[in-house]
Length: 375
Image 1 (spheres, rainbow, N blue to C red):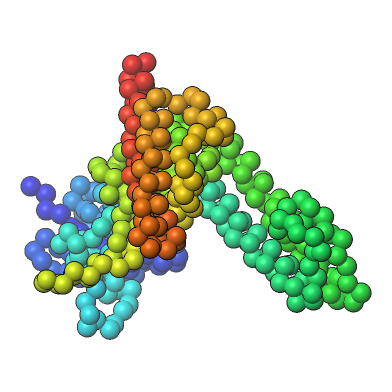
Image 2: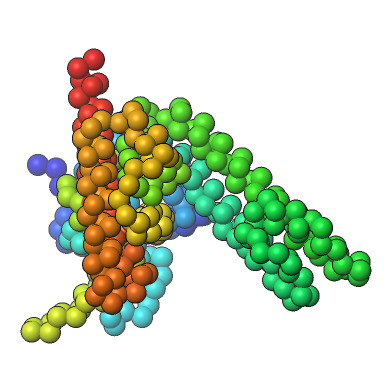
């Protein structure tokens, strides 16, 4: 029987600290190597055969390049969640070597939690979706700068108009200042607003094109999720890119935990104390789900846009979407009736909405696999 050696890697942009937990119990640091493919290959070869090695490192800004390199060498590798690594209260010394040693020791003990590593298609789509999200944040900042600049100088429209509508944009272009410096400032801020809008439009076109070339199973889930009220194309794409295959979760509460929408708890003995959401999960999923949850404050209905999105979907998927409307709308107003604030109610609705998202995703994936098998 092959004895396993558990290896912890503390990965940085230029260096990797390496430590190994031996089968006999010894845990030792092997030093620091350059973060280069050839250096990694050499150190792994020295440590033993690929079948005898188990490697882990923390998820971080270096991505999954090292994971794909190690798995390409036939070495089992896991990327672990940094926030779930056990911490000792009295430990006040932190170095790369110590971090690698702790990873190796905890990995051998089974105390680490692996994260999902996206495949090439999901990772590519996720990068594009996050680029659009960054563009939306930049647009908000650009709009705030322009609006606050005008407010400081008492420039506001005489007629009531929707902010950032076409009419509002025409008014912004008609505002002028006598001072050259202020006029140059206005033009620069306005240019940034226009640039942000063009950037978002360009990225959304790229996302639509990327979805058309995505695997058929991914497209099927994206289409199916749009059966839910409040989830249009961009939200559905974000969910699929961030979560991956929903069938990898055995139960709906696991998806809720993945998003960080579970409740905090600090209970001991007879005392039970629960707080707000944990936020220890995917913040991108949490954001789009809570935004979608606001739609369930309205009474259940199938409007024209939703009917169009559901036109090509199966009856099973549409039934789940309608069940979600009935249940979540009733729960929204029931919680409001108890005196809960709308923001807390919407967060609770978003957590339950994830259960319906999981049900639709699993149904769509199962139907796709059945059709592929029949063909």
